[in-house]
Amino acid sequence: MNEERKPTEADCAEVLADIYVYLDHECDGQRKEVVQRHLDDCGSCLERYGIERQLKELLHRKCGGDHAPSELRDRLKASIREYTSFTSIEIEREG
Ligand SMILES: [Zn+2]
Image (spheres, protein in one colour):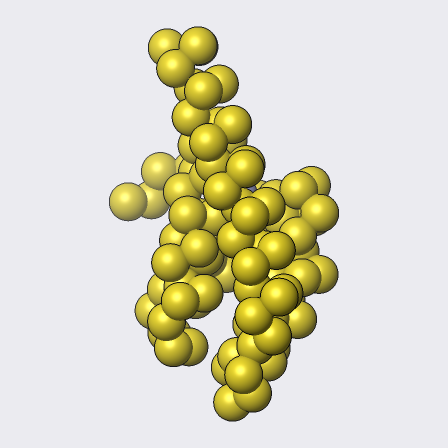
């Protein structure tokens, strides 16, 4: 898997979906690594959807042992759900 390729919209959606699951679970190092790697490659993925700050704050709290505010989590989930469903539609249209 040394294939060099640019992250696509689908990759972003996949990662966002991953984060979505991740939010409901404990701080999972492996999943976090996958997300982190994508963000390193993709750069502005979360920033583009305006959830980068929210996510970082939430992950920081979660991994720091605090309880993430449910309000923040719910808002983040809503943003991700909105984006992932939007992306699915886009992919279908193009394919
Ligand atoms: Zn991305």
